[in-house]
Image (cartoon, rainbow over all chains, first blue to last red; front, side, top):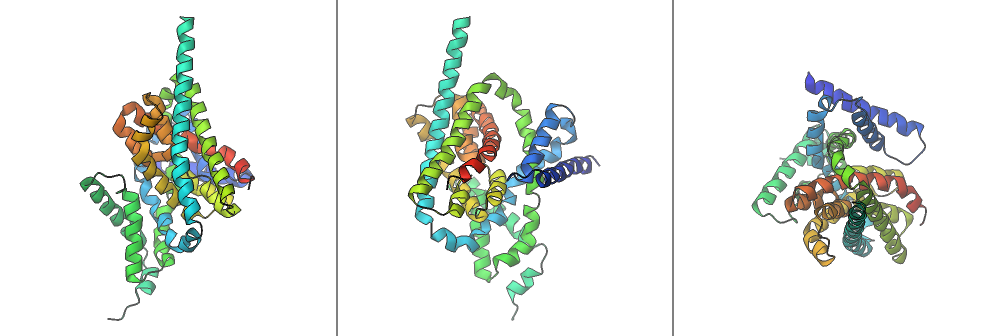
Length: 122
Length: 234
């Protein structure tokens, strides 16, 4: 019973997400609305953590399996990918390293600055 | 024996799910044996399924007729990403400004650099929006790519390669750019290479891992907010 209850809360939030997507004319997937509903629900204690935790963490754990069908779909998009293979490779390799470097540097710099500021106050 | 595999599989309700799960199990076995990031279970699973389908002459549509029930659970699973995020919220509080601004700059760098390079390569709008969400978690990126009119299957492939690449280069990138703080390391890895990269962050340490998984969701949300602006650039 416990798992059915948790499962139904999660499905209900997914459904609410779909309703919001239908009402709000933005290119945002239903799952994002559902995610935000769940997050605010947990923060404001409308949804107690224990009422979704086990089933929710199970879903998160098995999520990689759910990407397989879309990944296999590459066999149908191969022709389209072939036409843009070089740009795709350059963009993928280049931006990944760049994003990591920028994010890390900015975060580290801001943390150090904050620490210094705190140091002066003390 | 003269059985048309493709016709048979088309009517099978469980084939897609069964072969997908088995292929993933196979990928996990390989990963356990050789601990190389290139043996990512998801990557191996996808390649294995493609190989089996090609070998048996089964069309993608026939496979997807039953595999789609696996994709069906992607929305509820994405909703559940809020749970680990909620559990790590207290970690965010301490350095909230640095972490959020760091992730924000990462998401902007990702979309900005994809835009610049796409412009240089003169890609079409469809190709451009396919690549825009490349750094974020597959769960969010698939939905975003679809909403923007991208080619979802290519988005998934690019995200996968991004994750594996991030996983393989995380240590050296942090070293070269002198990113030494564990919080900054985790945020950087999660922001650039989502959950596949974050497995590496988890190996580096507990703080790195936790920050990585937090950055995955925040970077995804940040991208959702700004992607429609970037999509109009080209």
